[in-house]
Length: 254
Image 1 (cartoon, rainbow, N blue to C red):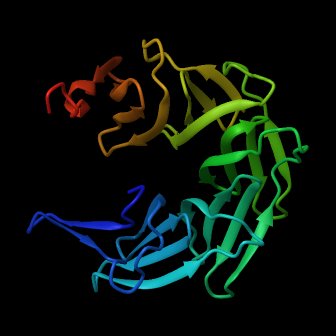
Image 2 (tube, rainbow, N blue to C red):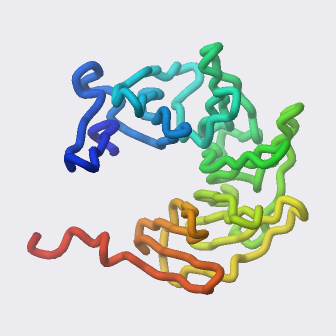
């Protein structure tokens, strides 16, 4: 939520539980992103820091307030095999090691004082590399996990403005390619050839304001937009279905 903190919904009782309300009143109310770690823990980044919720005991295991010298923790993307949590900041990419309780900063690109700060929106780990994209970026950042060297791959199909590419999200496809999402366009990136092309499926809407994309177990792609609603893309059938009416809950007179 954006005002009541982390809510846990019990599917059996159909009840919501505000897990931080008793011990952490009026704190960590703004939830930014959530990561499920192997169905053992839920990690949530908040406006105040980081929350670890234990799924088995149904209780909060750890609450970490952010250190202002590192800035706001923004958006967990994954936790690797060593238990290291990767999360984002509008200056680059941070790595949090819970065993050492420290943050390591990876600067993806230098920004001047007059430029918009880069906001990392999505990370994909593929073989020996980490791929990161975000708003106001110079392209797709390919990070070598051995020496943390960075290669920036340009993305021609996206509209590029003075501020940079406006990339909102990214997901790995079943064939190993990446599906990248801007606020209005969808492109496919091939990590082997490093080629980028427009997706054959594009959402026809005057202002979809696309925000996020998720792939389900049936290789369907769900895209959420602020103006266009929810879209279901199926590349095998070459179809797009829109679910906007199901989310129009504020009708006149209600």
